[in-house]
Amino acid sequence: MRKELEEALCKSYPKILRDRNRNMRNTAMCWGFECDDGWYNILNMACASIQGHINQTRAQRASAFRYNRALRRAVRGDVRPLQMHFTYHENATEPSEYGIKEAAKVLEDIEPQCQRVPEACPQVIATQIKEKFGTLRFYYWGGDDYCRGVESMAESMSAVTCEVCSSPGKLRHGGWVQTLCDEHAIETRYEDFGVTHG
Image 1 (tube, rainbow, N blue to C red):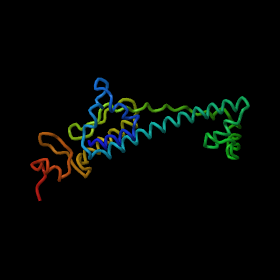
Image 2: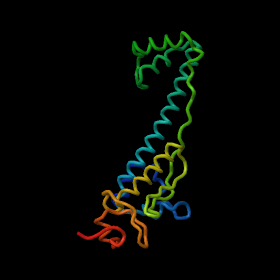
Image 3: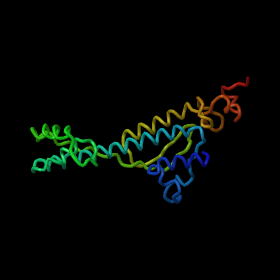
Image 4: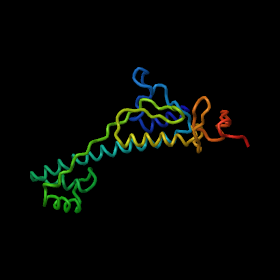
C-alpha cells in the first residue's frame, strides 16, 4: 500500500494501528500494510466500525456508572447529580426542567432504577494486515464478537474487490492467488484463467 494511504489510516485510527512503527520483535505491523491500494476503503470502513463500536461501549459503561452514582447520591438526599444526568450534557450548570421532572419520576420507585453496567469492548490493536490467499487478513488482539464480525465482513468484501483499483473483482488462480478485476487480471497475465482479451 502507498505510504500516504498507510499514513492516513494510522492518523485516523491511532489506537488500532498504534504498533505500526514498533520493533519487529513486538509486532508484524512493522512491515506495514502488506496489500495493495485497492483495499484501502475496506480497511478504512472496518477500522471506523471497530473504533466506533469500542468508543460506544466505553461511553455506555461510563454513562451507567454516572447514573448509578447519581442515583445513590439521590437516595442519600442529594438529587442534583440525578437531575443533571437527565439534562443530557455534563457541562450544564443548572438542571433543566426536564431533568427535574425525570429525576422525580425515578425517585418514586428507586429500587429497579439502577442500570446494569455493560462491559466495555477491549481496545483492538492490529498485529498484522496483509493479503493471504487472495483476501485481506486483519490480525489483532482485543475486541469482541462485533469486532470479529467486522473483520470477517472485511475479508469477504476483499474477495470481490480488486486489490489494485477497488473495482469489482474475483479470485484469480495462477501461481499466486489474487483478487483482481478483469483489466488487472489481463495486465498480470491471469487471462488463461477465465479472462479473455477484447
